[in-house]
Length: 169
Image (cartoon, rainbow, N blue to C red; front, side):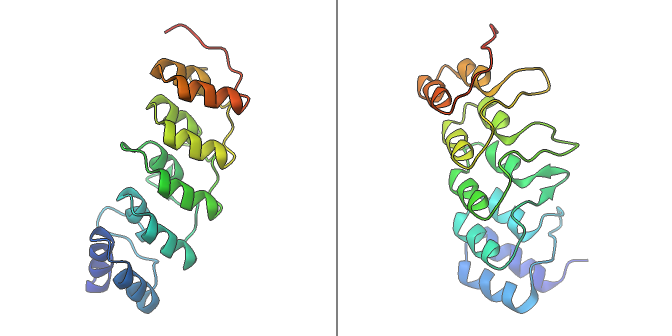
């Protein structure tokens, strides 16, 4: 059963109350979960709040958590709209831009590419994501972004030396 302090923490995250989040984490720690099983960092990232993400990371939250077996960086890279500022905070704190799991076997850049999320692809590539990652169907980042029809994305991937074969869909 979740207590009042945990409820207060997740409400402060939802309302973007950075000062209250800092106070509650200082007083009670951040090793708690909400009713969905999310940690404070996952809740802040999903809500798209980079300032609270930065705060929690500064208080030693892991930059590489998973939620329901999916790396947080993948969740952030595939949200619509793109959580570019959250990705930047996670990567700066040491999140692996190529993180995979048994439930999510594809690199985050593939998810961002399949959604045509130029901003997230840029952030992941700048953070060291593999521009030649291949999905479980054999498609690469370049192929997925080519499908989106965005010339900027295609040009960006060429600058990052993406080299997979663009297939005809």
